[in-house]
Length: 154
Image 1 (cartoon, rainbow, N blue to C red):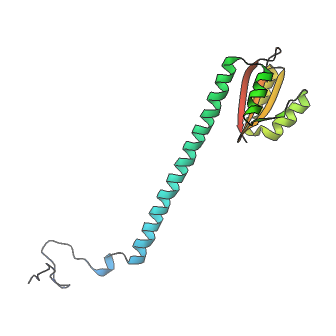
Image 2: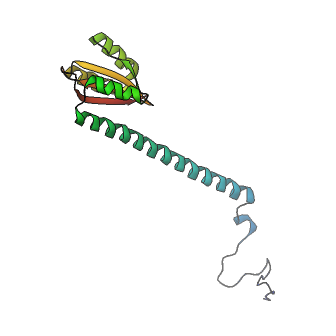
Image 3: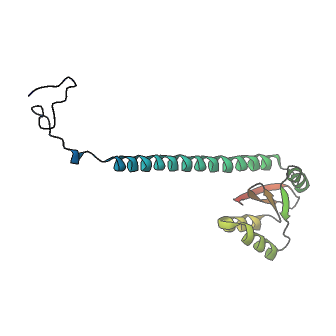
């Protein structure tokens, strides 16, 4: 067995104890490229999915924190309405009857309709605002003080 300067012993020679490799056992260039493209695509998909998930978590927590702090201040219906309208969150409904409330909840309440109707049953006033990509259902007591809320992704 004669070694060449590059250490290659030729296709017919192998070192003792080494498995014999053939060209058939090495994947072809198209297979390697296809595998690389597939892995890169999966990595990109995972990164985008995680980014969207993180954005949704932040979006929901921001709105929840905002409304929770607002309820703690116990503001009046007029103060809340003016404040939200000043920042571009328009009042879209102020239902006065159960039928109006059910209609608004059916249109905008999505999967939280049951919770919205339950909370609305506890308070005499409900106001519905659109705040960016969220819909706020705000519940006020008889004196017009904000007591509770539900928000739904618009």
